[in-house]
Amino acid sequence: MAAADITSTLYKSRTQGLMPINLKVTKVTQADWINIAGVRGVWPPMGNTVTVAANVAETFTYGAMTINNGGTAYTATSTSIVVQTAVATRKAPYYVATGSGEIMEVTTDSTPTATTSTLTVRRGVLGTTASATGLANTNVVAVLNQLILGSATVGPTFIRAQPMVGEPTPTDTYSTLSG
Image (cartoon, one colour):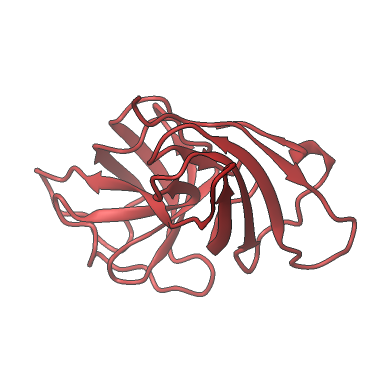
């Protein structure tokens, strides 16, 4: 079975501040992914996939997109970034991290259900510095609100993640997440 975008349920807390996000998903195959709508990014999460026979620590990576820049080089002020080979089905707004450590906020994703897209970005967010480094042709950026589930175990998966600093606290409007 091919990896697919899967649906999750968010368990909210009415407490102010940076409360963890708790998700339950049903993982069907290795490399299923979750888009955490309403949250621009999360710090690396922890979680377990539970089956009748096992309780396995889940492994996570962020979704990835490859920069498509065969023409004029991007600069530290570029706000339109073309990407290729992205995991399809992304949920804007979201953060991406470059190899230089810059975090950019993607405010618009021209084709979020395709593997190629043009991103409109706000540069150097969350205290990072805008840089052309990490935006050369074929460089990879990480989609910080998209989690790829890496273990081979399938079944109910329970995940806890921390929203990135500066994120709005999830509200009732984010009670159902879909990938």
